[in-house]
Image 1 (tube, one colour):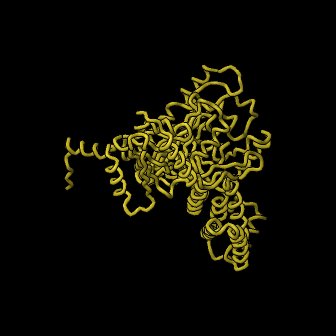
Image 2 (cartoon, one colour):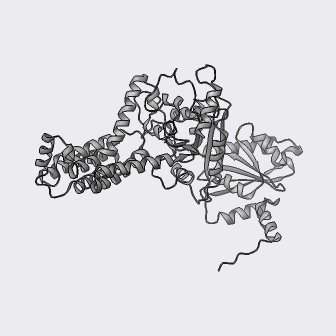
Image 3 (cartoon, one colour):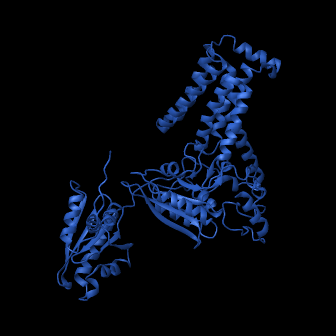
Length: 522
């Protein structure tokens, strides 16, 4: 049995006293040194303002988190302050320092001790003044990190080449450069009781739905975890169906993709320390689209989308269909092809299911090895390994040549799916369909597809159905799903995601029809 200590008024007062900054500067610095014990990075620099009755002040920062040039320039400004400071009361308190530094640097005041520690750990330098219960935090963080460069996971032929970095402020800058609007809102949150990771929520005020923004904000505030190291943590903690393998947040390294999502009424979630930005709500059809679709002619883009959709179904169904036909439904196969397959499988000791699983698992191992190995040799190992193993397996009579072709088509098709997370989900479902095809044949594949469709219909992405606009069907949004219509035809933003009925191309608004479609969707 657990016994919980009853919280008394005295305990509350003690906690409140611990969270307040003392007027005695020595007590504050002693407390900081105790909390940062055995940490040689903590630097405390005392100085006096002689022209202000010898006022004792302290400049505190963590050496490894600040920019040395910024600290040097602050020291020069402090020397000017000590020498040129007029004898007036306004500079004796934090407000005077705030007025002095705010003109040249980002500065803010604080009253809470925990917030003071957070500012120190964020790379700010903190000023304390004896006799004052406030502190001043001046931005001095280091800008070291990866510069803006081309994304590694979302390469394009035509379109912007810049990509997000691990610095959240740089990522916000890349988005603001594309959307120069006062309605673009940025909210800062914090997650992780130990890491205290900065999270930014971005949306366009008059376009995004207030209900969706509030729902995401509420979910982010409810996160209880000790650390957030990547945006994948956020996606897993706040997604609607936590047991589904299908992604419900679209992650992107490209600022133009995120800007386009914001213009449609979606919300962007930026996490400090990762170049991947999440956007929500994310519909399943979006995972088969690319930002490059809007930079080419709409007929070419529509053809590319059709090829991706075809690759999606090939990845999902080709191995399972081959297993079902060779094991249960040989009468469906044309006679010449059936004779050829039977001749190839004459010396193969394994049934089709075991043969397919053996080849698929081997290829997945090669794919994973190619990703984890150094970039210079990773691709060569995966390609050469697949060719050598496939050819050797056929010559040894372990695998039939037809199975090598099936696995090759499946592997190449999986690379055509532009989103890596969706590709992983398809690969997992493919193995399930293969097992059902090996037990029940085509009937097993149909049962698996029915269960898959029901599951997709159940999933929601921040309260929006995952299969929108196909199920529920929204006629007006079909212009940008399987095929891309010309831009002048896509007059309105997606219903159910956008919070406005304003036309994107300047035409009058069909208010009545829009409201009716929204009610049907809800």
